[in-house]
Length: 355
Image 1: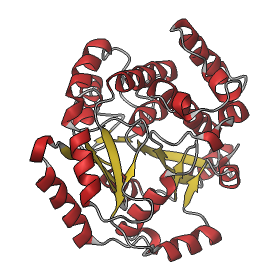
Image 2: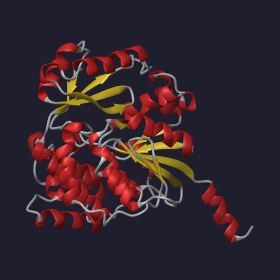
Image 3: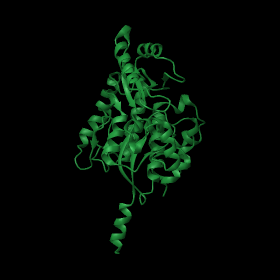
Image 4: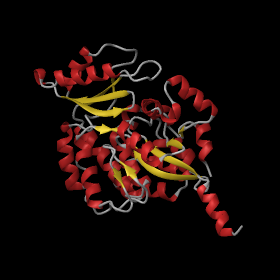
């Protein structure tokens, strides 16, 4: 057999991966130090740190390794977002390209910005600038907030009537006594609602208490709702479409739309990212469905930090019946035997993918 044939067979034997980038809220106290472990001494992190020092902010290396973790500091948008991006980037760069082929990239909410870097639509430093700028703008305005509520049962099986009731409740409360409420993110077996304080207060009163839920998300604005219109307009003036380019890998956005390397208009990609994406619901479940059905991955990979997106992703896969998954029990059994969902924030699972 020729060397060319051998190389071709090795390439075709690579496992196909769908990358799902994490959103806000995934870097917390347990994740402090992740960046130091996975990216210390890299040239790209040094450049990120230099960008932040020039802007008068603590570097990511300092936040991750020298400044003790405080939620009030590390959870702020201008710090949390770049930290999450840098940790996720370190994980994506660590995947062994000889054993794995990334066939598409998507993400949850802020994870869309990370996907732009992972898929090659933005350079690493340009993505860092975008993510840091958007995180700071969101923090400075901090309009409204988000509430998380599940609609699946204990086995993560969908309860469609409950979902319909929750969406109807939000429609009913919106506009009453100054309440503004919207669907923010369709997140697997959970719905994230965004609104103003009056709306969130009325929603919290109306939702049946369920263990930790309804859960108010710390230092989160009303992302992906019309309440972000002011941020949208400011961002479009501040961030130009210059750095955007056609992606190197297919990207799946928060509508389930595929941005192909062969046909994507960079200006249209900028327009969506700093337009509809900011003020309309982000449908993570649909993005995942498109990724699974259109690209037929062998495994789904969630870069770190943390592993909080794993549950929502598994719930969405159960709704799809992917690889025979129909409950939390079957998912856990499958994971124990041969993981189809790999969270790189879990050290043992991260090892699967390393060079």
